[in-house]
Amino acid sequence: MNTSMSRRDFLKGSLAATGLTIAVSVSPLGYKLVNASQSKEALKGFKPNIWYEITPNNVVTVFIGSSEMGQGTHTALATVIAEELDADWKQVKVRQGLAAKEYHNPLLGEQLTVASAAVRGFYEPCRKAGAADAPCW
Image 1: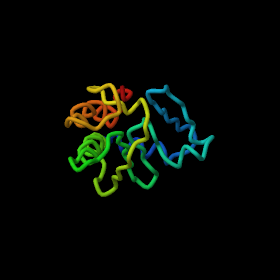
Image 2 (image 1 turned 180 degrees about the vertical axis):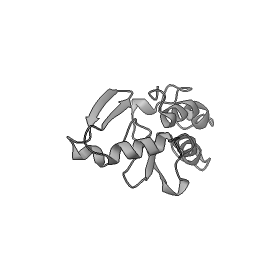
Image 3 (image 1 turned 135 degrees about the vertical axis):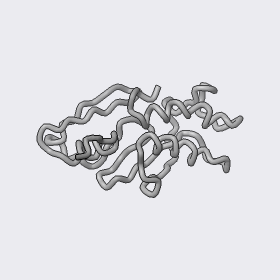
């Protein structure tokens, strides 16, 4: 009998179940408790923070606030999150994040893509977001 369960399997099972399933969505703006039996919206996808969302069909969409200008920023940061989630790379999509304070580069204090600072600045926030052991900031 296999008694181990990954974070990803736990999240998928929690969203797919009904009854007393409760999900907690944590972001830099606060947290929200969602009872899956009370809201069909909760079953459409799980977005615990600004960095990614997971749909019920296992598609992980990663949102990156830095621009992709040929240096691989989107791929590198999406890989960090996907690795922490133990996600299948074939199921990972990358989207440009919106202009928002939450996407300000910790090294630069602004939402800039310059000086090869995107991966250096966002590695730790993305790793933590994927690991879900702390809010993004």
